[in-house]
Length: 328
Image (cartoon, rainbow, N blue to C red):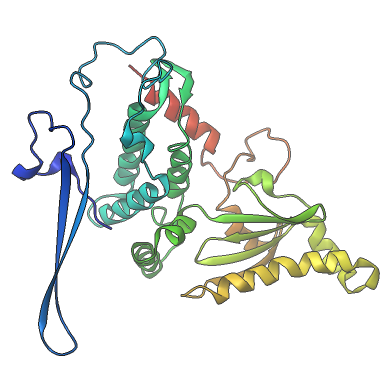
């Protein structure tokens, strides 16, 4: 991962006091020096080229936002190419790796505050809203998932070290820095599949309301693969209904997530830990700790399973984000 922080660079190459000429392009060159198998030293040069985003004159000193709010394109304005090219998945992984690096020299609480400030600044810059009106806050599709990625990052094992040994924490952070974007994103926001009698497996929200008595959940956190049986399914299994010929559908329901879990483990290295658990049992904590606590012992939510935690839910997190981002 290569990160260029333009604000903190003292190189004269990045000091631009006048507008860039139209059509100006940027060049970045990487020089790789290595020893070939024949013993000779080689130098490889890789040059990347791309366009600069050149804001129109006066774009940075508007006296006040338009009546439609900041970043509103109701007047058929051309949207910012920076906004349209934003890769929220790659950005979430990059921010996670920077946060992990900062934990080496800073307190975790300070790193969490830095993540919050970065998210607030991003939303204030690129969201559509009317100043001081949180209800008008809107994020374009290019940014819509980014806040929830950071919500789960704040609760992940990379920053929450409770119940983790120093060796485990170092291992998790090392794997985050070496895997690709797809796998790293699974570590930040695990994937959840729901199995029921109503049809084929369906992706489910990473939320406590996805826990239902008559469903089986398959959670992939990259480090763990968890098969979670709802209370009713676990009771039926204990009564051995799946061994009776007339309950073949239930037997297939029990076998489906186990087969999918085995496929995940066969194609991943290092091999994740495999956990089979039941609702309300001790090992269910591995799944419950990853869910958005939309229903807790302090809330009045309907449906799902209660999560015994003092953490805020994604809804409360977004309400605070909108309130802070639209402040004038």
